[in-house]
Amino acid sequence: MTETRFSILDLVPVREGHDMRDALANAAAQAQWAEQLGFHRYWVAEHHGMPGIGGAATSVVLAHLGHATSTIRIGAGGIMLPNHSPLQIAEQFGTLDALFPGRIDLGLGRAPGSDGRVAQAMRRNLHSDANEFPRDVLELQAYFEGNPQLGMTATPGSGAQIDMWILGSSLFGAQLAAALGLPFAFASHFAPDMLDEALAIYREQFRPSKTLAAPYAAAAYNCFAADSMAEATLIASSMQQSFVSLRTGSPGKLPPPVVDYAENLDAMGKQLLRSMLRCVSIGTQTDIERDLGAFIARTGVNEVVLCGSVFDQAARRRSLELVAAAARNLGNLRAAA
Image (tube, rainbow, N blue to C red; front, top):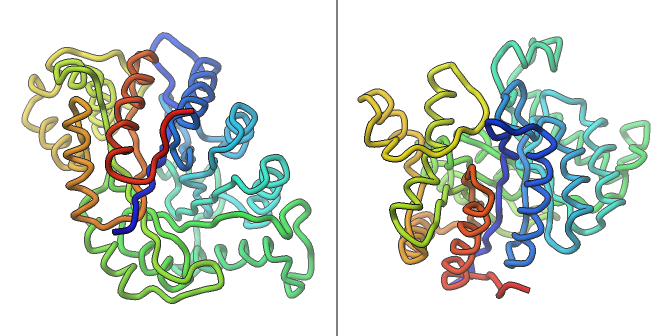
């Protein structure tokens, strides 16, 4: 049986009562801890116009994380490519590759990373056709390869050794990743509905490429671990509050945990959590190991990208430590350095 890798997606949460400087300092500390615990990669996602998420300037945040670490892979999970020109992203990630050679991942998505108003502000022109995103991905690949047919060279960028991924929360990303022979990561941490179908399509339609000889799939999964179920349930409530606030049109900073938050929600709130957070484990190390093992057995993914915004930083660190111990028993995760 193939060993499973384990990685981290950090939304760089901005906490109530704290600022962006605090969020970025916590991200660096968490990346260092993830590296010590043996996680494979550490990703940051591009979101815009959200007071509680600090990864909008993704490549800048990655430079910050790169300087704080030394061996763990770092990358975007992902860059919303329609917000940018392929040349800009080639230059940004070519710079990151020059700073941190052999450590840079670039996951690409086609969503705006926010709502229509932000998309308009980012892109100026929202008129596009369904083929633009695949064309942009191919153009970006060509910049990294130094293809002379482009008529110009991305400097930096040309020759950069970047691991490119296609991200998705629907079937489109699975089909594109399969057609291009690229690794595929599914956003099941917040949009789990099409996970199994997307993975099946990706594997069935995969075409080997010079990048990848066989399908390589990752899926995101929320984990909140503590030394007791009561503590794990409590720390999970901060992200639960954030999800409900976002979906009900009032996003804000990451709130402090609330005792019995999920139990005291109204029917609509409980349904929101059930539908969005089906890929989640809350509990002790034993609970996490059981749930992660079942998720891996069901999906057969090569890699699990672990998520979970926690308000208290000591609890966040302990949660990651317990998740690492569970993951170590399940797959390819070395002991802490």
